Structures are given as C-alpha cells and as structure tokens.
Picture (cartoon, each protein chain N blue to C red):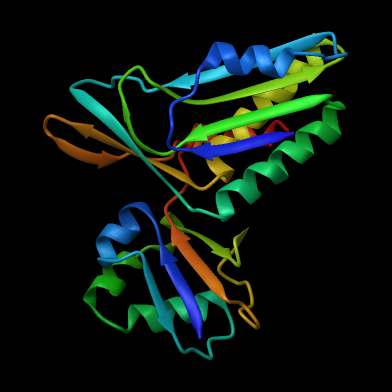
Length: 144
Length: 82
C-alpha cells in the first residue's frame, strides 16, 4: 500500500505505470480527481491535518485491502493551491478480478471524501468560499 | 496541557489554528463549553456543534468522548476531500 500526501504535482500516467509494473493481479482500476471550474473559479486551496491525514488514509486503504484481497493500493492526495484542471488526487487498486478492483476504488473514494481530513476552498474572481460537505457524501458510506 | 487545533472555516472564525489550554474538562463536550465561555469568537465558532467534527489524538470521535490523557483535540467542519 502506498499513501502520499503532497503539495507537488504528479504525473498520472507515470504513477499508473509504476503502480502496474510487476503485478500478478489481473485487474487495475484507477480514478483521478481534477480541479473542476464551478464557475468563475481561479483555483482551489486544499487544507489538511498533517499527521492525521496520512494515518486516516492508511486506515481506509488497509480496510480496502482486507475486504477485497487487493494486491496493491495507491492513494495520492495533494494540498495547497491548485489551478483549475490540475489533478487533485488519484487512487489505484489492483485485484485478481475487476469487480473487486472497481469496488475497492469506489470504497476508497467514498471514504476519502468524508473521513480523510481535507477541506477545499474555492478561490474565485468574486472571493473565496469553503466547499460544503454534501449529505450524499455521507449517504454514500452507508452502502459499505 | 492540551493542544487544540482548528481547521478550515473554523480556524478562520477563531483567528488562529492552534492554542494550548490547561483544562480539567472530562469530555469533548465539556471542553467545548469551556471554549465557548472564552470569548465571542469561540462562542460563534462553536454555536452549532452539529456542524462540526472532532478528533482526539488524531482519531475521529464524537463529542461525548472522554479527554483523560488526551494530548491533542482538533475541531473542524465536515471533510471535503477526494
């Protein structure tokens, strides 16, 4: 399992190639989140809780590995100021079959959304505003 | 002594991200009462704790959690990562 919380940019293709190298699993699923322009937006500022963030993600990834017998899991999440279109984060999972790899990736995403200590602030031409958590994010956890 | 951390809009509302406090509060809820009594900024920040989350020693927990032996308590709005 690999968990990285960083301000630096990362190369999604290079990360996915490195992740997939030498795997015995038959399936790799990856998801990448990019900074979306929600109208008049210049950038996104991502705050996190150093120390807790890594631990919280590691616990979520451990749970995914256990439930779906993953061969590997990867989570990269950035913090700091990110421009529109920039990758914010990616997850990758490797399992024997695609159903497990897809389910584990969705589980990781759902838990990262509302259990890992990150907060997003949209910085636009008209000012700044914190992104509010959605009820649907919390609901998404109930299916697991 | 206990370290108290604030993140996101809670940090902005209080005016800083960290403070140290001597407290005998037995639970998180009791600590919140103490913080509310400090000044108007804290009172406003903690006006609605249903809108907040708490972690004790970097583990998510709830407002009934005991504080005995805790070194770090963090308050923040619901997370919005991913």
